Length: 198
Length: 169
Image (tube, rainbow over all chains, first blue to last red; front, top):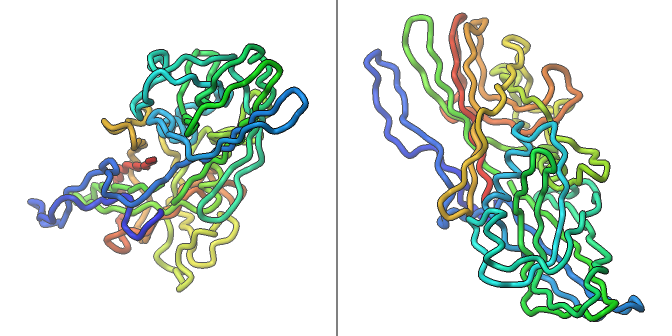
């Protein structure tokens, strides 16, 4: 938790007395709100563009935009719902067509910028490390070589895909502060650091 | 990655008791969550998710000033000891996916179960959440101290619990 305020409060009811004289409290879980000074999951990124001679041309860094179904996927993946299924964490280039929304599903991105190239599997990275907060990085997506024609890239989507049954979950969008253009022969890499807090 | 446990106990005399515990994930629990969520299955994922989760009761006796600690593991937890009876209870497979807040910035997931006729009497002051039915060769995902203090329960008590975990951005 980033601040001193609890991220989850469980006492929104009042103490009352049951007919049998046992003290109980009416309670219930609730969603976190903007008032809660906490961020459980976040991600940073470093994107680099190289020319065909492997010379660095551009670097973009920032904090990724997190989608609700990404938050959902992390919970579901850990706690049983997707146990036994094999997912492929992927990134693919984004050409902006509209602002991303936290409520977006995978199908929604068609209206906000179709990918400009093929998807790229992310290499299996190192195990999570650190004390609090925990980080996992740097997973690399490299050799975006199918951008043989000059293409403007506004960022990269990161998703987790299940082949069968087909299912795709948006996790994050690495949205560049300004686009970069891949010239013929250029390629790019993307490193992400996933972070989770108590 | 906060959460809360809600317990409802139906005692043999017909009375109902409710209490709660705030979830405190351990270091290895959070590491497990990142590893499972971000590793690539098609590239030899060494960290598949646990297929089953269990919770166990923490003894009222044997609790020391060390208490609960984020570095606790099943193999090493100097501040507390686990009750051997009741044994760890398997959490039912989650019957539904997590839900997302209307603004998409938070997700909640709940698991629940009902335990019939616990052996007893016993007294506990908290619970643990792990992926192994017994022993110490597993992940201690979280511990939790009862907000209402230690609970003494007679034999034959039926307990229903709901465990809700929140993830936000």
